[in-house]
Picture (cartoon, rainbow, N blue to C red):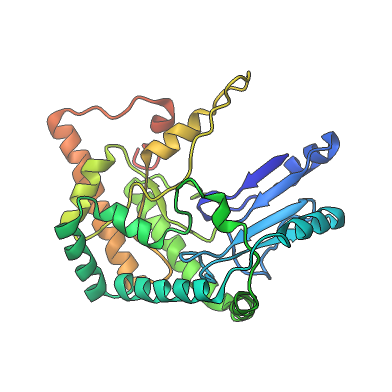
Length: 313
């Protein structure tokens, strides 16, 4: 099995991989969890056996919970349907609870007053306000019963809600906000940031990752400017190929260790995005100047030299 996961909202053409898979009898599966751009844009590659989409609380077209799998093999679909029929139905009470959580999240993180109140609470009662906010909206809590939480059948209420959300997807608004986000991406790239996927034309910019050396110091600069990026919000993990001759890809660990997430998204106006980018560029310049002042050496890792310093030099 070959899984093409389009992370960070970046979508690429997997045709070459699909041809190799077909030649060797390998099934190709697509993970579109971070790359949904509307059903008119793409529902997956025609040669993929399954293309998977998820619509959790912080997704572009959230349905609060739920996922969709486009299955192109009839026998496989029937087997999947048979297995899912043994799962309990997601209750209306649980859906109601999820909806209330979504409304609370919008109240907290959708207004300046809500954000200020949340962080004042976090500052007083917890040592890690970042982790608290991430846990509040995260769709995949990490615990022992992880998979069991998702072995459910959708209720009629959830299916009806999902259908309405898909029918009301505003492609024009999506394209407009995508343009704003790409402009922000270009501003940050010109300031010296390396942004994974910045050269890809097909990208819905979700989430907004940037690569920064000495990220803890950069975050402290950002806090003084009223900008709050996130460092530990990713659930990307490096999978070690133990007992195999497979060589680890050096990009994996490097990417996880050096990625932070800018607080830029579709809910922020074009003007506010411009202000955020300006403050982040100032913080990055401050980081570089501090490094020169104290004689700090940035990593001589070849990936860092190749990518992080590419735009700046």
